[in-house]
Image (cartoon, rainbow, N blue to C red):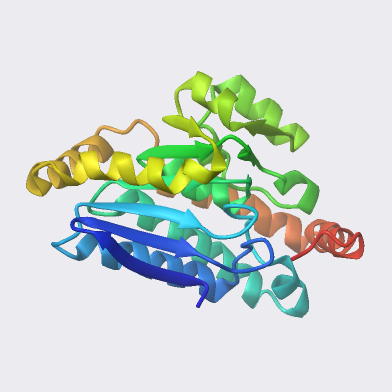
Length: 250
């Protein structure tokens, strides 16, 4: 199963993504991830959720090969809806979500991390949006929650990456630790939150979301509209084919 959930300690739910080789999720994978996070938050016994991944990297976005195999647009539409559902599940989760990030965090991974409440990262973690190189747009909404406005624009236009230490400097990554210590570092933060009165923490999550200045659901869907335009124009398909031809696709 690419998405699993368990409770290693009282009050702590851990949702794990394990979709080799690079944790690029299929349409169903994105919806499964959304369901797992939502279910964890609805469980009254859950006080906090840790979102983590197995393998070389945290997340490489959507399964581009799945989209290219579809002669129509159903896989593309499904991926867009699936990503929106997963990002929303993190943001709307009834309890805080801690993202534990190792290796690459690209595309959809930025959507997950940008909507998380706390980010803990391994020293080897890198973050970026290669969307413009794939003929797509999206998740600038979430990258803008991790870095200042002008840096976000530079990273977006160039498809460059930024490392965990740089994000720690900007305050969006809470802790940077050696990779071998990542899970324990995330659990350490989770324990602090889980020890609080969950009624207060759940209310705090709603309150913080309520005063958020960025309408994350609406702005992300706005971005996706331009992705559909690029697909209809044939730009995205050519970019994805080039990506797969060069052996970079999942």
